[in-house]
Image (cartoon, rainbow, N blue to C red; front, side, top):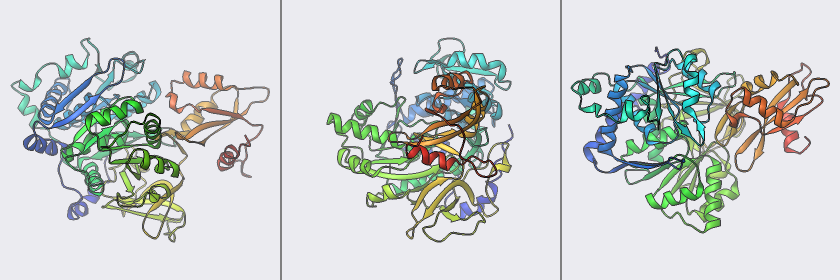
Length: 548
């Protein structure tokens, strides 16, 4: 695979000079952990799935398993620059596979476990992945059967590895069982192909508006420069215990649940299925001090604490991102959890861009999305790229040490000018104190519980339904998820469409269930401009006001 991370070389000199890029990879940070705290708890993975288990690793044990898996990957033909695609929930194998790939210069491509045939096929083929790692089953779904059925459609995949399978293609048989690290050639394999700090180390697909996801390329320098600034701002250190229940196949989970604890020499605790009652138990059992997730997680945790009377005294900080935080929720969480609620905003392309500060008044977590992290600049411009006055809404541009290296095979979509300003596609305003507030999206994306719904792709599928003449998918507000999707359809003359028929049709398209609109509204005609362009803002207003 040839990676076209064209945005990295131009930023290197300045980023090094300013001290944001430290030229250290995850291998360097893990080695420091082993040398300084070999027996300290490094990773506790708690599975709530049917075949769940709790697995614990010290830093010494984690490094040994990373070596073992790395040699095993090499035995399967994975070489420097090869992509390992992985569709796992928050299991220990997720963390260890990333560390193993980093040992031999392979690139990890995490994919959300909600994806099905359509999304999986596109991402694996676009990345030209050599290996595909899936669970045998998770939450009742048979991933092994799906992956094996798709194998003929994945020409670059030479091996499918199944976690939880006792077959010859099982994870344990191929990777974690044999003591590969003791083989005669192991030392050479583990030392000769380490990636450099500017090599692509992570490939993460983000749902786009053009019908296909885009592969975001990150290096060690882009990832770690964000985490160092983030952890410093939030006063996090080696004594912290980090709970990650948000999927690690999202940048939130990956950066702050997988990589950050190793950089801090802290203890990471993974939860694979969100259950607020179990989360309370885990927080108390493990002494969790920090977590980050989207608003629904905070809503659920707060509600459960208030209903059960169980306390979470060790939980100092909850960083909430992905949707605005309702004011009453911050007040309830502060009183019920005794936890500082931090508002944050970011993207797959950058990691966290802005956060409120632990020292800030709680009201700022309700009214703003925070101020830029060190090493990050933001500005708001009009559609002619002229800077807007303070407080006025315009396009949000970001220039950051953690900005991605570019979209794989799509450099024309990088949306980054010669000065390094990245067009986020969001609309925002900046106040006199430098705090931003996201006020809308120029990209047509719905964010449902922190998960981007690719509106254009869903609309394109619905247009294929024989009863659909026109369709527009728009967001409507939801207390728990932030937003949900509504399909507004103008049926063909003499035709009709029920919600049940729409859902069945979408399922036939093999799309992730979370992407299927949860409401259906039929109209005789769409609100439109004189040129015929659908006015989605009017549809959103009509939904909000109960007119449809």
